Length: 191
Image (cartoon, rainbow, N blue to C red):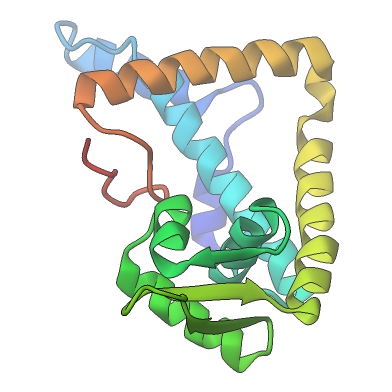
């Protein structure tokens, strides 16, 4: 075991978020620490879920950006075609990032692109049968794994947690005057 792994492990019964809050309370009693238990755990969960998703995708031979692109097209419904502008909006990334994702997926025969009829500069992107098969197979693996990670909560607690997180996200977005989110750790989308 590497030294960094060893230092990341906590002694039995010691929760890192609680330890951080207790240390700040001890060292700076005037410092508000009530957010640490929520925010620190959300960051930790985001890291664990993100790392696990990347592992599952690597095993499936798909990178996260490609799955995101294919998933947005698949969720759009038949004929699984969207403009690059709509893809950018639904993927929460820039037009440049979508252009790169589309080019990579097109090179791998997962999508095709063509000019939009009657619109001089608009481009339509369509899921190919290979792209459709890949997203169908991969999304089941990813979502089954995430369901497995959450199953100990049980259906009622998962629903309650989802509702609390939805309320928290809405409230934080209102306070920050942002709409939507980008990927964890990147700038949010301005409102």
